[in-house]
Length: 232
Image 1 (cartoon, rainbow, N blue to C red):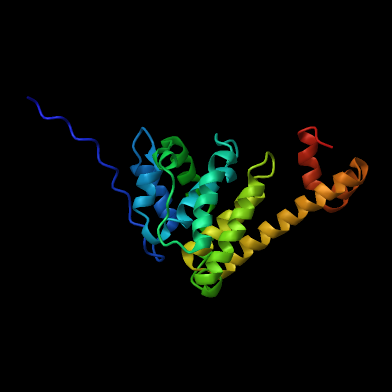
Image 2: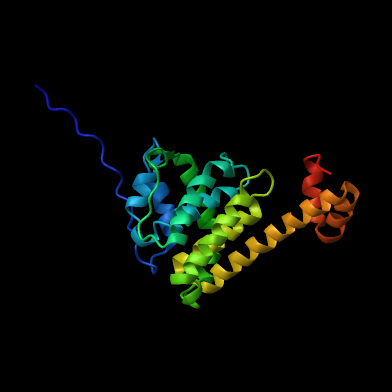
């Protein structure tokens, strides 16, 4: 009787447990080593050790920064919230339900993410470094995790994804690099964006004309976006 073929092994992904290792290189290597069928979330998380929270969040935030890349933010919202919620609770190892762990990130997405990160996000790595660690470790890390959850909640509705995705990117880089300045900047962008959305909701509740005037005066670029979608 011929022996049954053994199941294919998970790809030999680069280790990601050292803050000194380039996280951009990690993203690029993930794309290069991912099988054609895609990379399971389980295989990604199992090999990231200490960075198994922030790096997957960064990887899932990047598609929301890439113009035209398929995959709406709603696909990534639930796993990001689950990972950030566990950071908030102080867990040292991430947990995701089986269906999410078995979900495969298409290789095409990884290649697009890797190319975008390599060409557009190197400046984040050059500027970030370990500093103000109290904002990116311990209690500070938990506070940042709360802002990650809030940023994800406002990233999921249509049109509003790019700015909170930038906030998530900066906060993830801050945690990865132990850089409290980046983590704090990302959280401030998240708070400012949430404040703007709340102000818009209040403005619309007071009347569409007031809302249009408010946008034209304080955020004309956002008014242009809404106009393109026939809103307002």
